[in-house]
Length: 262
Image (cartoon, rainbow, N blue to C red; front, side, top):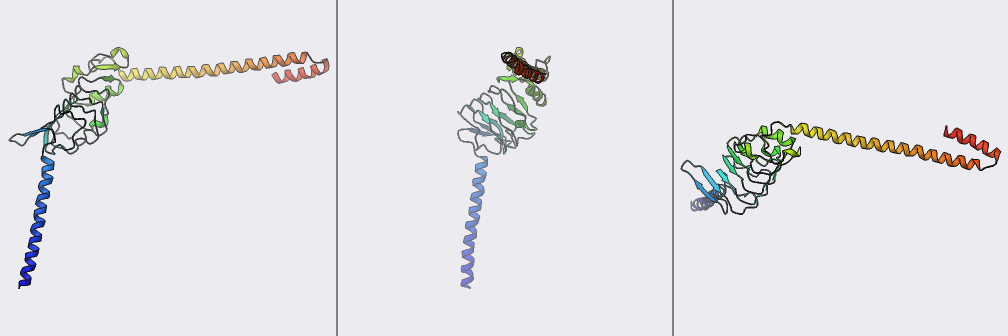
C-alpha cells in the first residue's frame, strides 16, 4: 500500500509540472501573437477592434512582431523602402493598412499575400513608386490610394490600373513624372484618356526595328560595293602588269585574266 501511494504521488507531481508547462507555453504564444509591436502604440475598442500605430517611428522595414489580431495598421511617415513578399501574411483580420509617406520604391511579388477581402483600404500615397508589380497585389480588392508618386506612365501601368479599385483621391493624384510619349509628363495619368500608351509603345518598337533593318541593309550594300570596287582595282592592276610583259606571254595571261574576271 505505501508503494502504491508513493507511485501515485510521484506521478501526480510529474503530471502537475507537465500541465503547468503546457499552460505557460500557451500563454507565451498567445502573448507573442497579441502583444503590441516594439515602439508602436496599440489600442482596442470594446468590440475587440485592435489598432496598431507605428507612425513616425523611423522604421526602416516592416515590423515582424505585429499582433495577428490587428485590424488597423498605421506605418506612415517612416523610412520603409520596400515591401517584401509575405510581409503581412499572418494579418488575416486587417481592414486598413497605411503605408503612406515612406520611401517605398519597390513592391515585391506577393507583398500583400494573405490579405483577403477583409482589407478595405490600402494607402500607398506619397512614396517613390514609379511602376507597379501586378503580382504584388494578387486578388486584392481594397480601395487603393496611389497619389503623389513619381510614376512612369507606360503601357504596363495603363493595363494594370483598370484592374484595381482605386481610391477617388487617386483620380487626379496619379501624375506622370515621366512618360512615353514625353508630352504627357507632368499630366494626370488617369485623365489622359485620349492616348493609348500601348499603341505608342508598339509604334516606337516598330520604328526601332525599321531603323535597325535599314542599318543592316546599308552595311550589306556598302560591303558589296566595296567588294566589287576592290576586285575591279585588282583586275586593273593585273592588266597593267600584263601590258608590261613580252607580247606572247602577255596575250596568254590576258586571256586567262579576262576569263577569270568574266
